[in-house]
Image (cartoon, rainbow, N blue to C red; front, side, top):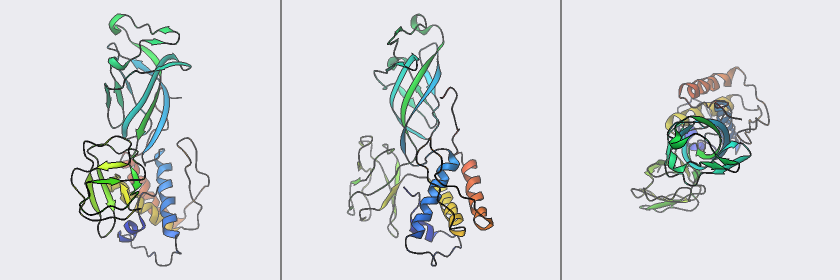
Length: 284
């Protein structure tokens, strides 16, 4: 998904004229810029579901903390533990899992004390510390989707194409100039579904296909700068990120014109803390 719309770019004070672009070229350049941001951050910024494995330490009380590679963490959907990577059992419950921006902590009630090869020996009542393998699946990133169907004014809910990453209490922006507005997801929202109930009804009507996003304004500004860089140096090849583990399918070397915009965007990504570690302690 592109991280900004063509309207968002043309309304931004970049000083760049887009009138000489061919039909469809601006959306293509925005997509290139969005993929470039993913590559610079070593993660897909739009919400995704990812599975990772690491060797983690278990505290005396049986709790353990995991620091996934990608962030912000929205939810943890599965955790398996075991003494060996090939001998792990899924935790019976994740109800006592505390999810934070860059880590999640699992507390004893959801912890497996046995594996396929027998009990995990840490002594009675978790009186000693130890290490276990852990495989986990988690949802991370910023929801970026579109309206699946039209939305009337004063609507109490939205129907989006993809609900991944949306959580209760989250603020979503419907980019639909001149009727752009923000809405808040109601506490009754069921995680992962495409029907999104709202705390307060919409002000305006919106057509199907209108962009719905939870990306912060800072990332939007970076996407604008990156797009400006690709427009200045258009003709370079697109950078396409197929997955978290895959690299770009083509390479691009911006020249002097676009490099200034791209360097500003790169610096803002670093200073804003959006760049993920290439690996995490204990990761494979």
